Length: 158
Image (cartoon, rainbow, N blue to C red):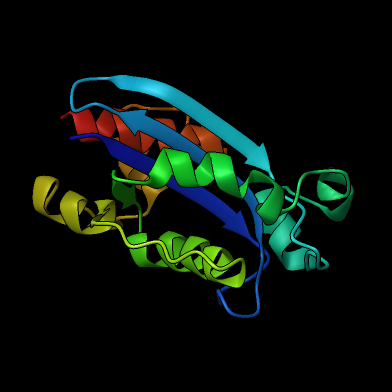
């Protein structure tokens, strides 16, 4: 069994009205990370300034990036037949599933939420944000989308 550890950045909080601006996927074989993939995505809509403040991704950065449809085949191959893992999995999965539905594909994957998992593995933390969990595990590489994925991937190995 293989796992797709996913982290995304978006233009907002709703999959129906928002767009994806960045995706990072790590493929984990149960013992180690065996593949890393990351891309910026042109969401075909304006990125609000408050989102740029949160993610560091602005309109200029995604202007010439591929659209979701342009990366969809490769992403589908990464996600198909793998367990979809993310921090607050329903957020990431919801955006990606909605983007696939818009191009006629229905992503159905088993899901694992690292928020729920971390509450069981690290009981008593004040916060279960990915950044806090990475800090707790002495993993400084959590300030970027690929870094968040690596943090989840290394945490998954525990």
